[in-house]
Image (cartoon, rainbow, N blue to C red; front, side, top):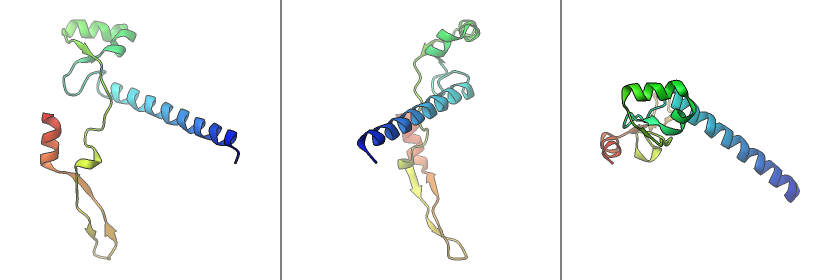
Length: 107
């Protein structure tokens, strides 16, 4: 594969990942009612684009903020509960520890 072809393939996957990220963020905003799940404030860019949302924000007297999409429980906070099933197959289960969840919520 030539360098030019590699660049085109790389550009394609970068665009695809960007579209997926935008779609994921949009779906999360819709799911969360265009609000920050921590503070309950409305997402400022969403309010600016949506008249009905702006009216709802004014009626509730809830301020806006710039929200950021993030993983609630990152994999690094997981406890490794690996083991074996009865038939000998290896099983790997990651469960967030209570202390990691508490530290995340307090931070």
